[in-house]
Length: 283
Image (cartoon, rainbow, N blue to C red; front, top):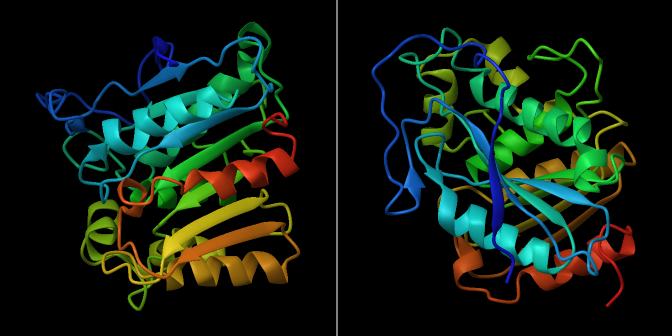
């Protein structure tokens, strides 16, 4: 089995958009983290004979209130590495006025920095810098789709103009919209606050931010999801399709939120899609 090779600090120097606080990280024992102030990438390296050259940054969910690091992050990374994909689990800062001046952009900064860090080190890690994707679950799917639709504006220091565009996005029961009719209440309030401006609601409703250059997309969701309505995935699919962005969607009739823990074969169609696009090797 693939094991983590190393834990890499996300920023070489100071963490941007942060302020001094006495917040302490907790939850390591349970694998559900909060209080993150020092974001990292945990690198799961594929065996050399399996490596496809592709990489994926994995963003666990948790409603922007916690990070389901072990279950959605590490478990997925090991499965990806087994298939020859270099996998990086992102431990990102959760939006909080206590630790950052602008909580709305903190998670996005960390997602952008993750893409930049992997792309800048691609040669060193044996990664093809044109095959770096992003993958997110639930609120992590919101963050992944935010990074996949907001890459033209750098929220981080990027003086060497590294492309912040993921080459593909994989979204698993994702929060997509911040509009009242669709939004997951907890994710909305944690990221934007209880009474955000319509401008911020629209900016972080990623179905409104899709462009023709949005990366190819894989979506999966359960129709009976009672936490994040499946219409999040459906509206995103429709927007991508109308803009001719390659998109594939798998909707399970049952499974509710977090169905990956109840559908052991859920990654099989995902790997078929990745194989079709040369992100994993043929078996």
